Image (cartoon, rainbow, N blue to C red):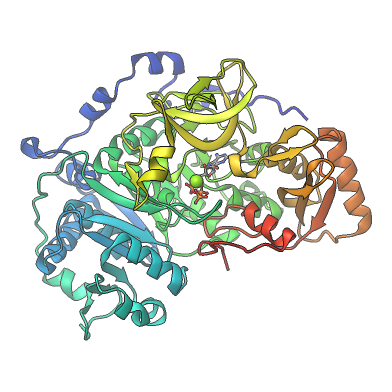
Length: 584
Ligand code: ATP
Ligand code: MG
């Protein structure tokens, strides 16, 4: 099915979107102008993310506005104003200073989404230290690897996580000097200290030292979907992208309540779970609990969320549960819903219209890009299945690498090639940790080659085809798994699909789909044949899967991405490679 375009009636958007005319906004764009909308540190001392996110609001008229609304697992609700957040992050910065932890030194976290984690991120940035958040569900091995590779000197964690996962590693991590426990009132041996005690003893005032926009600020490991996670280095200047995407993509307005469901353990949870909403001065909701359909819908209703940023897996889980949230919950405050992390099937975009009363706005970016690069916008029509248009200020292109080591731009519409971004946007990663060679290989001429394949249509909308690594070569065709997955998703019995190419001597690779069914649907040979026929009708026999296997659970990263490389390794009986980010 060709999905009809979802047109926007701007009259129904209140408040009006932050930009309406895309072409004009792009034509007028300059990063210098964006920089001027921010403060900079007083007396020309540079640019610091935490100053822009917190202090500039706390020092102005928004001091008493709620910056962070924290929802605890047990139903607690705690509000922190911008002034509170300033004081608490100052305290954390002072704790680091007292411990002798300075500029450029690495502070890691292994923590649930609790308020101290947010104080720690912002306080570390104020101190000029580099923050590296880890998923609290990582096992000891991935934790040790990352702490070692990232040269972690401080770890913020809980007593339980420390005892269970870190204590035994201490002897092999000599550079890891301080453990700051978020839930212990007493200091212990071996520099295992009580963070609440340290925070209580620290001064709530702190002057941010000079910060060069190019100073390293954050270290984020990629999701490990295609291989061993890479450590991407980001600098303070990234805040320009965080600010701009908060304004133009998330379309944040001063009175908004914003909720990003991502965990801080991956880049979305920091760029959009902390920085972008705060830099834009809105109220940022944080839920300590993990996904649970009823709870999430209740959050949207009770906390009157206006703008919601989530991921395709969560949306597919809601779809799978057969839920129509707006029949049961008052979602009248919700103005915009966004999704990132994986291709968003057109089915899901349209489901949003019916079940939430709003279409879902897909956007695309990577750990390496630091912020949203291609998006659907409040004011613009949505083509379901498309990632949308480049952010004003970003030049995206479809390119082909040439034999001479350069790139050639693909100017024909609807032609597939590598998705590339012209270098120079503020949140571009500045390196892969300990892997300069790999970093260099990402760039050809002045293009950053993303590793994803895409198409651009005649209206300039970008369409995801697949990761370069996942592309299937079958009988002389190149097949992107997303196309096949989306077609199968249209069948009412199907909840989720992962598609791989399975080596086959005659045709190169055979398209194989792993399908998990909607709850209540029973697998049968009849259904398998029906799905094969259904896909053939939609896709044609060259592209349609030749094999379908039912599975209850597709292997996914902890951030919810289908790990096609694991489906393939398991199918072929090959080693699974790095599984540190595989969900339990
Ligand atoms: P690794 O690089 O370690 O294999 P990863 O690429 O999954 O892991 P991330 O940086 O978290 O790590 O994810 C970025 C990738 O996620 C993109 O390159 C793209 O493949 C995919 N992605 C993100 N958003 C979208 C989207 N809206 N549509 C399609 N794919 C997306
Ligand atoms: Mg990647």
